[in-house]
Length: 75
Image (spheres, rainbow, N blue to C red):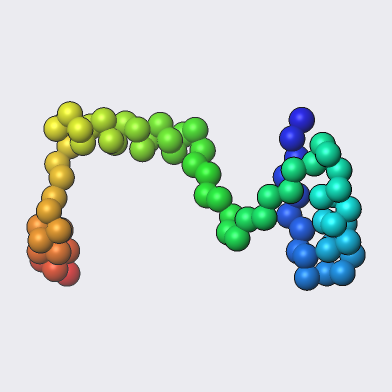
């Protein structure tokens, strides 16, 4: 089983815990500057279906100019 912990290392006790955890050979400590964004399976399915529709020509795509024109026209 794999666990993910979020530890604020600005706290002295948390920093001591991190130092200790790094000494253990069965613990892999990875510093992350930002949280990774993960799509759910449902969202991935929607993205893949939309992409397939685009690639097969079943959905309309717009140039940047068309997009701006349509956006201004809808105001």
